[in-house]
Amino acid sequence: MEKLEIFRPTEVEVREVKREDGSMGMHFRGKAITFNQPSVVMLDEKKKIYYREIISPMAITQAFIDKMDIVATRQHDTNYILARKKPNGEPSSMRMTVEEDGVWCEFDFAENQMSRDCAEQVRRGDLSGMSFMFTRDYEYTDKKGADGIVERTITAFRSIFEVTIAAWPAYPSTTSECREQMIAAITDETDPDAEAKKREAEEQAEREAEEKFTRERALREEQIDAD
Image 1 (cartoon, helix red, strand yellow):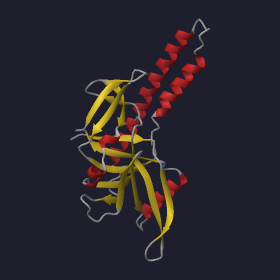
Image 2: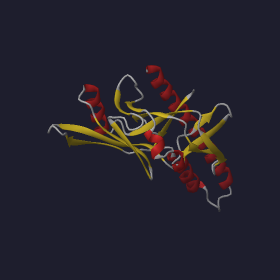
Image 3: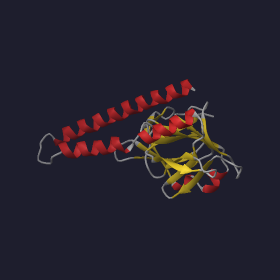
Image 4: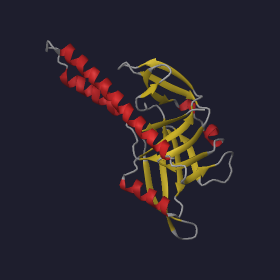
């Protein structure tokens, strides 16, 4: 099955903790999946439409997460597993909880150089967000948004198998917010050219959305090729 990846605005943090043996280690906590927030602009190649994806809270329950086998990686590099949540209560190095705003994961970094490097990159802000991977067989509804781009709301997943700490967590609201601000700034009801300026701003915003999608898709393909 085709695999999909979604970048979301997320929160990540690393803090120092004391282990049971008295030694100090690094603990990670981050929001891997965010509810009710649009994704970056993407392309549905079959339907030939641009769309943003929104995850409904009903799409993921704690019972669903509990039965999944999910690994945590850095930049989708599956050669280096940071942690793993095994299914059905099996002993695991990662814990995932479904909360009101999304799905959070937390784990202790292992005592190896790759994990230490990752922890430091999160602390410095080089890796500043998360994304996740899932299979395409999910349930959704589509409706056209106010800016003409389809809003796709996911209501049920079949499988989620990876969460990753990422360098490019896309802030998908940026495009629409900038667009609205730009239109508001240049649209003056007393200006005889207001409508023309508004259309120009809308067209520019659509071009930026397409360019953003193209850049992010190229980055994802590079990451997959590297794996």
